[in-house]
Amino acid sequence: ANPEAQGTSPDQQYVKAALAGGILCSKCVLGENGGREGEIGNPTELSILRAVYMTGVDIEDLKKDSPIVAEVPFSSEYKFMATVHEPTPEIDGDGCDGKLIVHAKGAPDRMLKVCNKQAKGGSLKAEDVEDIDEKYWTEQIATLSSHGLRVIALTRGTIPSDEVTQDQALGPEFVNGRDQPWLTFVGLCAIMDPPRPECVQAISEAKRAGVRVAMITGDHKDTATAIGHMLGLVDEQYSEAVTGPEMDAMSDDELKAAVMTHNVFARASPQNKIRIVKALQAQGQISSMTGDGVNDAPALKAADMGVAMGKEGTDVAREASEMILADDNFATIVTAVREGRVVWDNLRKILLVNTPINNAQGMSVLFGIVCGLPDTPLTAIQVLYSNLICAVTLGFVCAIEPAEDGIMDQPPRKVGKRLIGRYLFLRIALATATLTCAVVGSVFWARTYQVGMSDEDALRQLRSQAINTLDFGAISVTLSARFTYNSSFAMRIFKGNNFAWYSVAIVAVLQVFITYVPGLNRVVFGMGPMTGIQWGITILMMVVVFVVMEIEKAIRRVLKAQGKDTDDKEKWIFDDTEHPDVNMDLPKGASHLNLVEMTH
Image (cartoon, rainbow, N blue to C red):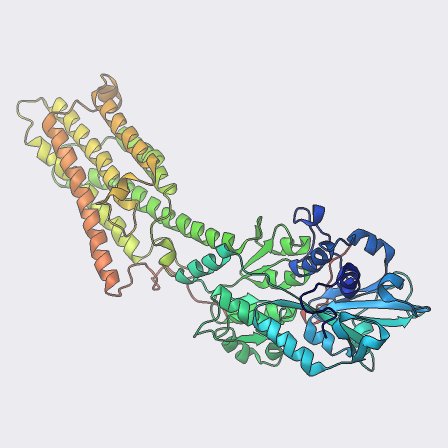
């Protein structure tokens, strides 16, 4: 029944009395002037406080006038909390002498089971209290939940004043352990807590990246399913939610199958969360769990990556986690996944740059002598110099390379995959061979122009040719390696990483410096000034190395389009991708989880 005429609003006193349970049976604190700054508590409870505050009621005065005598703390296991108060005539009316008032609020389906009366229109006057109509309330709960609203039930009851003492520790049986239902159902509070826009976008990005997102919640099944639709978690493949009681009835094998066909888990208990994590791990999935409460700690610990909330999370949850979200935003997790992929890619790029350069330094000396050069094409000091300058400049470039286009369109790599897979190994071998051939070939080519020179001067020029071909060829390898798949024959090569061109300039200037500075070139490096023809050979070899590396990438793009594994996803001889068997048993004591946050 509606207590107000059509088109009118209830007065302050009505709101204060009807929603008293949401105010008194709460530990939440509104922010300054009813705002969000400094608020403490979850959005559902805070919305009730804010609704009352907006009518002009002084929340703190109301709490002071009706202090808590005893309480049943909230737990995700039984999904309600209750507080006991001295009666207040303004809220509870007359006729409460020798009695205490009990306010209980929680999951509607749980509260409905302990109620035998209902308050018409939220009025608690004796003439407005009647037998409860469970069917009506069940329909209302389903309707509100199906629209994605988070629903909480407010109930009220009375007990003799000698039944509870001040600050007595009460358990859930105080509410649900009585022989008969005894509370009065006051009403339902429903709020829309819509997903953040960036969260919806982040989940979409995660799906493209092959990261499956599942939602585990204590909400009603219909609410969870509706929110799942909003988030894009419920689709043709994952079409419905599964509830905690349904999971409790499943065997381990049934749960293993269920976690692969459901993305939404409603009315989940702490035990359910642990079993979900272990079932996913048993299926070979790498599992990350987010949480903020004390009861989430065991599941956070069991997951491969526990993620705790930094703002709203408890100390216990943070201690059990490997990562803490400073902004409590799911989108940050997807950003972290993206950055992790960038780090992995850049490590492989560093290997692709430094390893061929280091290999070519030694191979050039070896094959130069094997091919008939009278002396080594590179001196020891030249090798050390090339190693140092290329690692510090060109290697550094790849370490800070930004994310490539399409990095979040790739599937996750398997656990146990090594940095160097088959294709990276082939790329390193190709770059090594190309650089070595370029260095040795340029030396033999330059020899054909050394007519009438002394042996000492000829050797110095050849060593200048070798070191410049090597280091300018290293620049080509670096510029090509900046993009794993995308072609470097594009304007993108000039964008995204200015340090790449700073490094190229530093290497080029230093090469000219050690080639022409008197004393430094002859005495330190055993080099001599180069001719224009030699510089032409150097630039040509630089282009050849770049083109060869780009042709290899083009071939890999074609193979990838044909469905070939060019991402090193398949197991190689050095990989250890076998997934160990997972013990599905709950940790000791986890079957009796009933943890509450300590209050001071």
